[in-house]
Length: 515
Image 1: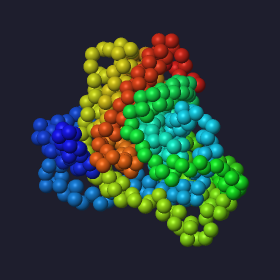
Image 2: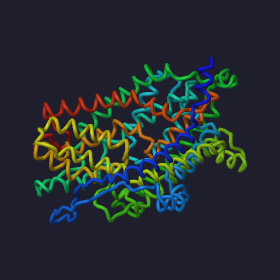
Image 3: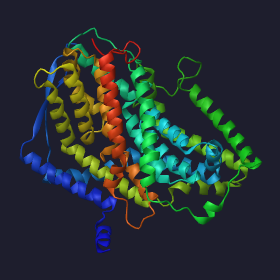
Image 4: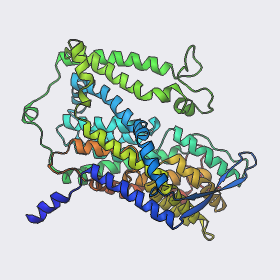
């Protein structure tokens, strides 16, 4: 009993854990800078002449006067500009209307009432895995929605939060459709390939087949782990007695609300979709037409669609909830609507504090260059000795997985690794497109295990929000929930790579393994 009480007393709140990580990062940066830790890596300075430029990156100490000045002068700005904060608050406005009006409960009841538990989990995970096409927005949409979906299904919301986060992070590198991140990576992949072969070219569907197989297998794996391993080990979730006794049935009133919401939502989507189709009269207004690929026109940093995507989704949620409320008579006046708009934001004070300290931690870690140094050092391992194709595949997969723990940003990481990995593997007979697949699969393995991923704090905050224990949810326990997924997904993805390499199957349309 004493041991248990002692353990409860020393359990750290996630906020305190983040504070400790911030302090440790500052101390470690000072120590590594004192040791003079630095790494060289090459990038291409000229796209035409393909001339190399050597980059020297050193660990920058924050345990200094200049480091402390940086922390104090940038903390507020970094917090205000921290994307997960603004995205979550705006999305919660829409989710609040859908939830309070009853739209979500009615829709989920109709869709899942006769469905098996595993089927609901499978569909949810599949959506999360495939949602990488929308960038990082699914983190702030799917995690809150997953918790509500499982609550309406009288199941522990932890199951929805944990499985959706596993699907989202695993899906980071598994993109069936060509995404804006893929486009960014492809540019560096092509530049790296031109060092060996200046005429090498790649298409946007070069990865389709292998990604499709990976998405299906990973979705099945996450579903099985969730239902057979994670769910039975989670602490029991106690529903309010009133909610447990309620046998919710969809009446004509709710159906009328759904029909009205569906019609309004459909009209909104049709108008919106028309605005992102190029070539039609008065269409394409939301695109950045300076870009080559459609996905870049859609999601480039300067496109109207990309900049306004969070608001577009929020407005859709508000329309669905509002028109459902009108039809089902759960929204009777403007006060009801305004109360619904703020419903999901009630009680998120601690979430905002968590996001604040997460933004500080990520900001100072990035400033130290530790992630960049580790990534560059790992990439240089590929140049050691004269390794064959098979060892290079394994090594690139492993070092990418390790590098992702310290540098989750895909484009930045590949910008460091591509000009070493692509030509090295080409010399061993491995195609640039297969090299990029190895990189993407390696990312998927450990993306869910790093607190340096900006959207990890959303996952953490929602586990804390639905935590019914007196002691806080432990930050390391949240990552421990993801460990079984990481191990199994890693085994699946490396097996796919090995099988594809041995058999020599095409990885996509005009995409090959060997050159």
